[in-house]
Image 1: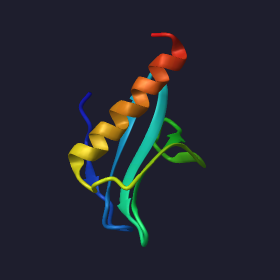
Image 2: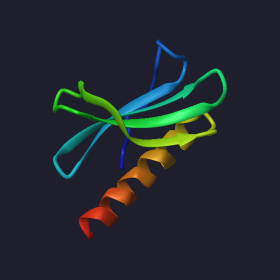
Image 3: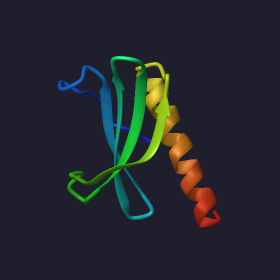
Length: 85
């Protein structure tokens, strides 16, 4: 999957938007006070977050493009398992 990863000016981390099976998601990886964290949220088709209740969280991660890609891949793998793919 090709991800267009960008720098997040609000938190110094990285973010991207992606689609899977007709649903849209926002993924963010950021530096926090006590740990680094990657979170994924559900979006509308314009990639505006519709619910800030996280669908995926991974803490103590490295804030890099590669790590954000791995988190997105792990999230999609979990979705595919739930969907029986």
